[in-house]
Length: 244
Length: 44
Image (cartoon, rainbow over all chains, first blue to last red; front, top):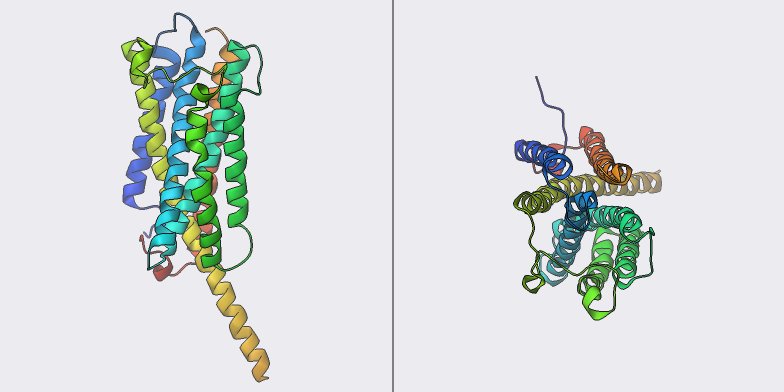
């Protein structure tokens, strides 16, 4: 029996199984086992997916910038860096969108509205739109190297927005709460299982991101190969026409 | 559970979105890999 050709390997399959188990445990901990918050009640359960979503988006965009910087600065100019950057940027857009949606639902319960033009919310929306632009730039015409150079420069500019988003709650008066777990001065006491659920969410979403990047960059590799083959075929066809 | 619609909706929406995206990646990868040579798939 031959296995079907795909972007998977035994390592990614194992990683996928681990991620699935961890996400199932997260759903159980977040929705069933963890206690309700004294102030926020059951709405605290949204934290276990909202915080990991924006965490993954930050990681994804930072990796996009690092890979772009590596591509632009290295002598070899390997397109692997560009594909990982592209894959990471795309996944980051999905997670920042999830963060905006879950945050909006949380806001409806806590603040009584889905959206306010608050510093954190507005800067996050701006981050989302910027990376939609990044993905659009990647789809402009040209060679793979032109794509890598154009999008690489944009990724290095766009990543500057992340500290702006993260520290927006400190820089401007914001309805959104400040960092609580990571802030040692906040004196927030989280129940053990609540802290575990949040930690589990961050770890499982990070592993999910790794799984998605591995597969997506391989798909991009195949897409580039197909495009190159199409170009080679077109050149051969033109040469044949010229000889006739 | 109070606000169950919002909370369960958020969990379900997140799970479905990620699952659809993952499914799309796997399907696209399989479609492209069917016509790819071994040299075009260095991870195999």
